[in-house]
Amino acid sequence: MDSKFALRAAMVAMVSAIAPFETAQAAPKDFEFHLVESEIKQSNDAVVAVKLIDKRTGARVEQAVVFTTRMDMAPEGMEAMTTSVDVLPSNEPGIYRFKTNLTMAGGWRFSIAAKVQGEPDTVESRLEFKAVQ
Image 1 (cartoon, one colour):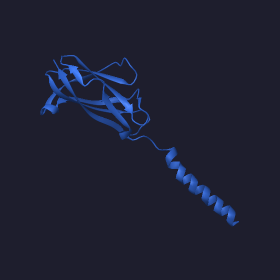
Image 2 (cartoon, one colour):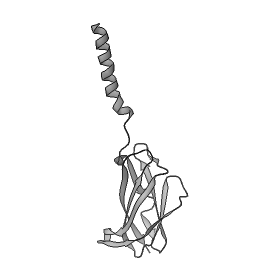
Image 3 (spheres, one colour):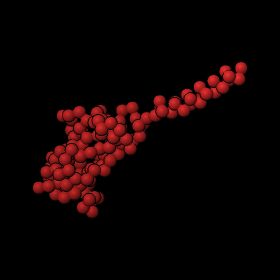
Image 4 (cartoon, one colour):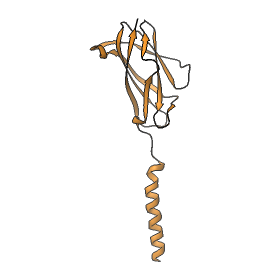
């Protein structure tokens, strides 16, 4: 009788130890946006492209839902200077493209937030690049 109880207790302990690993989900820190180019030509209809990477595998993440974007000149000390950002269709899996009006040459910051399908938390990034003439 005691051996059956010990066996059951060992099985429960083993299942309890394994279960958290089976249901573990990725965290926002497991994903990261990267600029496709760090220098972008200044224009009224400049295109900023980013890729979303799963840092655990190095693979691009497709079909994330981008719901927040902001473009400002914070790197130049002008955070209040913002411009519009419009989503463009993607021409490549895992690449997200945006049209914006880069009114001046210099440093720009692109803030972006997205939901990755199947993940409960939001992925957020602040990416800095240069607008060049």
